[in-house]
Amino acid sequence: MAARKTQPAKKKTTKNSGKPFSFQLGWSGLAGVVVVTLCLFLWMFFLGVWAGQTILFPSSGVKKVTSVQSVRDSVSSTNVGTVKPRDRKRPVKSDHE
Image (cartoon, rainbow, N blue to C red):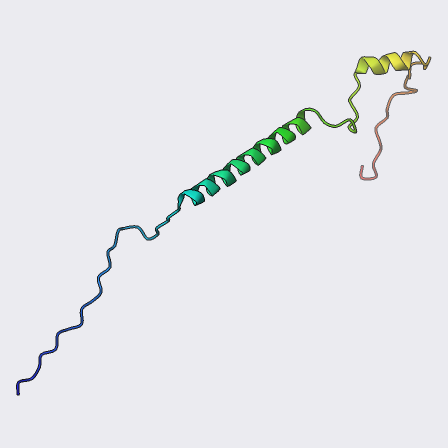
């Protein structure tokens, strides 16, 4: 009897589309992604408005800076005399000289 010839095993060929990753999404999934994205954008908008308002208009707990003129007016109304220095400043003598 003649020897039977065995054929080499066929290698499985896969179609390589060039993309290592495929992402499929249905209409309901797409709608969900759109809703979540809109919610995130809305949240960031409100957070930005809040931060801007806080920076531009601080709360009433922060003391306002008074102008020099209002301080002068309040001092002059209390009859406080002008402060004059007693003497000239003298240089401090150091031990290293």
